[in-house]
Length: 394
Image (cartoon, rainbow, N blue to C red; front, side, top):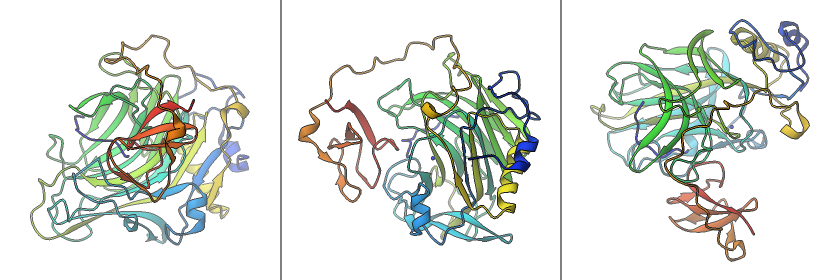
């Protein structure tokens, strides 16, 4: 997929789940088929059923979630990202997270939504989530180029950053866009990119059909492969991009959902409002879980009344990472990583959530010096592309 953008911008097993699990205590590269689950030493899981009152719920924040508010890409330049576009409501008798996006055909009248984790803790293993996509707006005229997504991502430190990692479980465009005229679902694994002028290095699978309704998205990341499933059907298996660069994630990522307009070309009249809903999300670290088993594990947690579980452990306290990225060196990045040492952190102020930072301004956070790529407020350095990492403080 070709798309100019700035990326914004994250336990003990149940007895029932354990009964579904087969394999040895070490991760095996031979058992990654859709029908097979491979057991490893317990590296923990994250499960969230999104039973919150609002984004101001103390549990929402303590469980590691955040509603984006800062301006910037992706999407329509000048559009806003109101925190209030993330709500929790009832759908088909169950509580869900809901992302709202609206447009009146102008940038000032366009709003996007993003729900994201505040920490980067996700890499190898199995991701599963139940998402409701829509082909038509909740109100107003249809036809807008809306993008409904689920993905993991890291910041881009500089053009063609070789450590950049992003997995797009789904980017659903019900009304087309990016050269497509009908409903299309993109599954994309990234090596890296350059924002200006746009150049993206990635592997993409295009699924040209409607996926409106509730869909189970499962992504397995193991043995150098990224496999994308929709409702248990394997849609894509990515290893390298067209240039031979690995698209296997090279660092921990945040987990995100967002809904945004790629442009305003499809708008006709009035104001259109679109909804995307998330029923639950599940992640098993360093474990390949078959799609049917992943959804069954989520169902078992819900059946026992568990709304949230987070037992993810740090790599140092976990089993050896299950896979080794491809040993063939990737092609030489178009640019050489900067070697200039960072400025003295002593002269920079500590990052503050409420402070507005303009392009080029610097701040220190978590032992690193950061420089704002553009106007930003409330965007934590290290989580989104609003900040450039200038290196560890001396």
